[in-house]
Length: 394
Ligand code: HEM
Ligand SMILES: *[C@@H]1O[C@H](CO)[C@@H](O)[C@H](O)[C@H]1NC(C)=O
Ligand SMILES: *[C@@H]1O[C@H](CO)[C@@H](O)[C@H](O)[C@H]1NC(C)=O
Ligand SMILES: *[C@@H]1O[C@H](CO)[C@@H](O)[C@H](O)[C@H]1NC(C)=O
Ligand SMILES: *[C@@H]1O[C@H](CO)[C@@H](O)[C@H](O)[C@H]1NC(C)=O
Image (cartoon, rainbow, N blue to C red; front, side):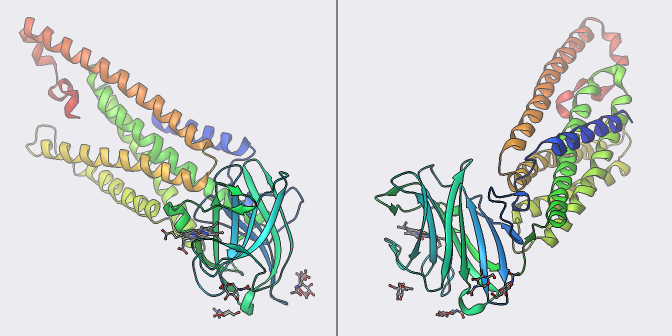
């Protein structure tokens, strides 16, 4: 019951922090432009922390775009391209933006037809109104173009590089993010940036993040700490057990709610699946459900099978602990490219870890002292419950 209070406070605190911080989530639907230019749709591109905003006019098959990406180095370049003849770099009709010799942002067009070098040239479709700017570590390309083949699904390619020599962009890295920065774009579907639509999706992502971080990332570890350390203190028996159970039960309830919002988000997101994050989430749900059922199938303390039950319960418990924390980090990487929330969560983990270390030390002292007491006063042994003497078997 006390832990329900604790979880309530934690939840309230996290919600408060998230809602009062101005740039609480940098997904495309919350991005705005200095020029107050608005675009109907946007996508968080799956690689290179890049974003595409666009408005598609189906009447004359034209589109107006804004591409936002952090260059690999501040004097580097960013590029966005349509590829009317293929899916990767070769054949791309690219817009590349960088700082020119005088230090002002320029955009040029390139017909990319070779992996060894690229040549500035006209594109195979019309482009106009090209501009670029740069601030806060990102560069932005603005342009309008006539969509080739008048199709509504196009192949897009994007890239970032670290340097430009004599007005020529120098080759990009070949990390997996650089080799996978391509995909199809459905011009009629994306995240809506209209105030209500965009905001509601950002809110859903934040609610999903908060519920899961509090449950898997904070409450489960606290419950494990309670089970491992409070039971050493005879005065805490059986209070530790009820605390542990109510902590893990509320973590489970919050976690299942978070899991459900995750499934909903996944089914709504267009064209982007975070496979690792999703599979870990499903595995966590299964493990936690098994763990809750195990509570009801628990053999009595004196029962022969209790040893095996303990072994299994602790094993699954630690698996949930580790996978949960990993998945919170995976989620934070998706939700928040800014790394701010990651640092906040690392601080929370460090505090919990510190507390656990301290309690580990205290436990050892208590147990060793109890052992030595016992050797000098043999009769005292009757008062000590067996499993309280072996904190390491928890
Ligand atoms: C500046 C000159 C450039 C050079 C010298 C260059 C060179 C290369 C090379 C050698 C590869 C193959 C790497 C591998 O398979 O191991 C590659 C892949 C790639 N490049 Fe570039 N690149 C340049 C510019 C660009 C631009 C402007 C874009 C964006 C429009 C781009 C997007 C890609 C993508 C998405 C891949 C991986 C997919 C594919 O192989 O098509 N590159 N690049
Ligand atoms: C789309 O293009 C047509 C033709 O130029 C124009 O009449 C129409 O107003 C445009 N629609 C929007 C929403 O800009
Ligand atoms: C299509 O319509 C837009 C919006 O009215 C206009 O800016 C653009 O020039 C038109 N594109 C073409 C290819 O005519
Ligand atoms: C689009 O048009 C180009 C010629 O402009 C052609 O080579 C290409 O195959 C077409 N792509 C599709 C998907 O129809
Ligand atoms: C782009 O380069 C390819 C290969 O050199 C060439 O066949 C094609 O005509 C060029 N396209 C444009 C629009 O210059």
